[in-house]
Length: 355
Image: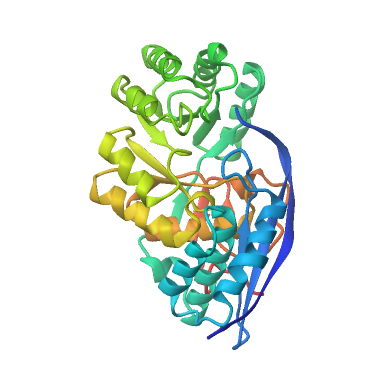
């Protein structure tokens, strides 16, 4: 089954409410989709999320990378030769991980369709259901409390609370949310690189002393400040999750060797897709480090691929795949079922979309 053509298209979806973090505010998803066509009529689908503040990519740069570099590198190749395809994708241009991820996802979609099986079973088939958290955007305390209560009422029992824009007010935000939702809701805190190492230690210790019972704190410091991340990990009791500091298997191994984090967040848009994400998961598992599967602002297309990957891996014990739950509507039909906190895999071939 040979690749005969690769085409890009626009993927749009309005958000229910603006998505706000320490890095950016977004009102709608405006991503790049990809179709990969083959000589037997099967079509694979993928998606890239332009996130300039994290991956350095824009919508235009993703389109250019796919059409001018990745497409010429793999056109005519056999889908079954995944390792060779991924080697060519990796070497045809530096970084551009979201552009690579879109094509990687479509290749894996085709690979599973080739064998008429759902992707999660091809990759390992560890489980059929996942439970995701939902993001609470950073706002004033009262609005975040109300958003948290609304999420719980929708059926979510794990909240990912965004902080980092106002370090002095972050303690109050989390304390008030905990009071409002009660002790049985799991709280995760994501600073999106918004604190210094010393601020992070002070804030996390204050949250520990206040009895907020936080499950983890995600990326408290600047992504390149590995020593700062190490300092926070060593001086707090709460688990520290590395996100923007880990793009590649090499990054993951370095942080593990430094003992600079307790957990690792894998995102396909950072890793360049499933092929490298598997390596990170296996490196982490071999070193006793559990992983989260996360997403950028993505629609059901690429989030479904991430869900298939998560369902296949024993070592992915935490799920942050709330992209479809944040959208007012889905741009595609099919794929896994996203029912509030529950993500349920289907037995449709590939990632589950008929094209």
